[in-house]
Amino acid sequence: MAFRFLDLPAELRDAVYDEILHPECFRQHLSDGYSRYKFDLALFHVNRQVASEAQAIFYKNFTFVRLETPGEEDQVRQIVEIEGHVPIIARGDKASAFQGYTLNAVISVPDIFMYHNEDTEIQRLLLLVDDLHLFCQRWFYSDLDANEGLNPHLKLTLTLRVPFQDKADRELPLSLQKRLMLPFGLIKGVPAVTVQGSCDDKILEAMLNEMKVPYSPAENLLEEATKLKDAGNELLKKKLPDQAIVKYIDAYRAMHIVCIDHYRGIFAERFFNRYLIGGIYDGKHGQVVRLVLRTRLVANIMKAYLDMRRYDEAEFWGNRTVTLIRDSMGGVDDEAIPNFPAAEQLGKIYYRAGIASKMLGKIYEARKLFRVAYEYLPQDEFVRRELAAASPMLG
Image (tube, rainbow, N blue to C red; front, side, top):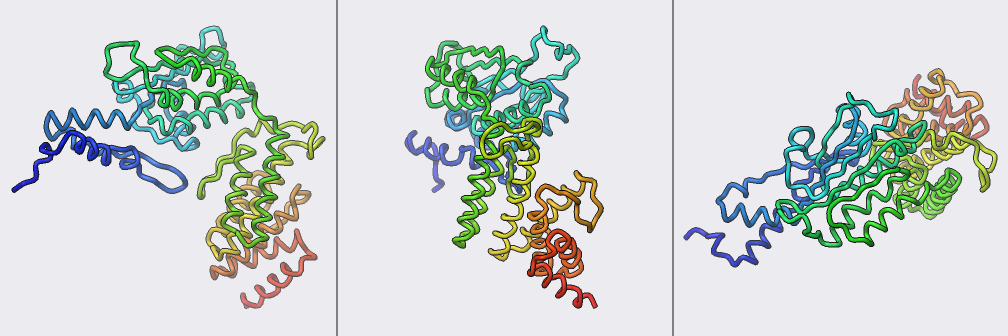
């Protein structure tokens, strides 16, 4: 006798729907911290009763946010999806037509600003509230990256609603209001913020107060990154390389550099482009301090991977850094860069990349790396030994 799903009590049917209609069931985790949603909603087409019951649970578990922002399509995709790691469910006409959203967030440029242009493209995106913090974090970085500041020229309108409900005064649960509103506390300096729909006064106040908190100054960020780096060094000394790497990645994030697997996003360059006042780096240039810290962190992360015998990862971090530095400094391959601010640490990067290449059987590459490491660290016994050992191997 065939099993009849509809013979189950409503509570059990809801439990089944809740188990299979959950965001994580549809999220595909990709490399380098990216993810996407692939929906299979065949359940909605079984019959009217199942569709009605399943959709009720679906919209309980899935809270959609519709975003509207100025910008060209390719530019918005680069900033939001690629750099921001925000999985977009729908865009363009599909996002505009979707009516199951709970928050509509409109970012616009008021007419009074010279940046306003009637021909500016408007992009509409649909995402889940679970990923809203990623969007706000990337917007946070965008303002820090802008030469004259981005947010003072924008207007933000947030409209809360209960999907598929005619009554405008229906209130959302407080816990959901927090998830929808508080991520925007990251956004500083927007002169016009309007909230429409029913929003709890305390939640609205908390969001607006957080918006007023100024950015942490570059001095504080660099000092925090230094503390995290030092904490990682202590863990490395205790032979806890995996935990050390976590601290090193946190140190990067403290100075607005995001590292996820092999992805690295360097944000807020303009923000650090000045001389520092006070603190441990008083009088030094922020970009130089940041560069030195970045170089030290790479060298330390490579040491941690070598300790774990993950030679492929050590090689990746080393080769990427060598390539980036040479491209930015205009250096020539296989030569040391004169007067590099973190020359000793860069020498360690070359040396450790050489060790990784050697352990992976890439002797020719290893010798090239050891030779450059020797130019940076001519007195280092380990570098001299590896360079000498690699030369006979080549015959």
